[in-house]
Length: 108
Image 1 (tube, rainbow, N blue to C red):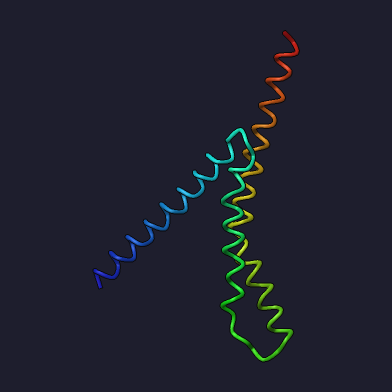
Image 2 (cartoon, helix red, strand yellow):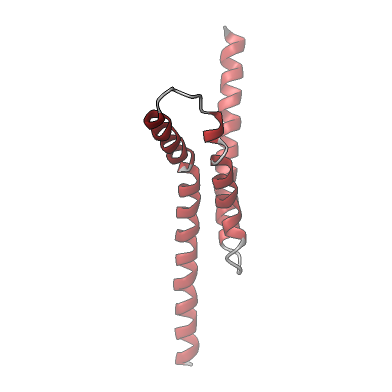
């Protein structure tokens, strides 16, 4: 029992480190001069989410199958939406900073 709980704690710590690392990597890539590096992780997350519907089992009803595929796609794209939100927030900060710098240059 103690081994299982230690393993579970180690696994949860590993998952937390990977999640935090992914978010920090997204922030770092979004701060780059070019906008394309910041879109790499959301693109990879989107492509990964497209694999989800391939694992769906046939329920026998077409309407249930379609609904199941849509729900799987929506749930699978939650990380994509989070990464895009981080990207837009960081790029907006950068845009505002660039405008302020441009105004300062114009005042001189």
